[in-house]
Image (cartoon, rainbow, N blue to C red; front, side, top):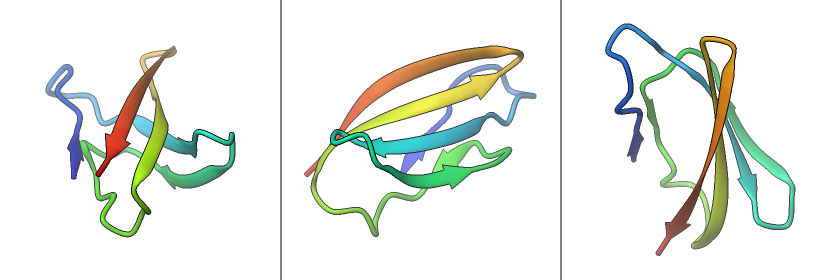
Length: 61
């Protein structure tokens, strides 16, 4: 499980990409992302909120 730890009132949209660039999951207005069904590997999480976007790298073991 990956949790949004930003501003309390905000529930961002999240896109999860495999390192090969393929979109593997898209979530709208959430504070957490369940990644249990994803294979082990490297992922990029794009987080969209307040007209901003951030990207973070996540390693699933």
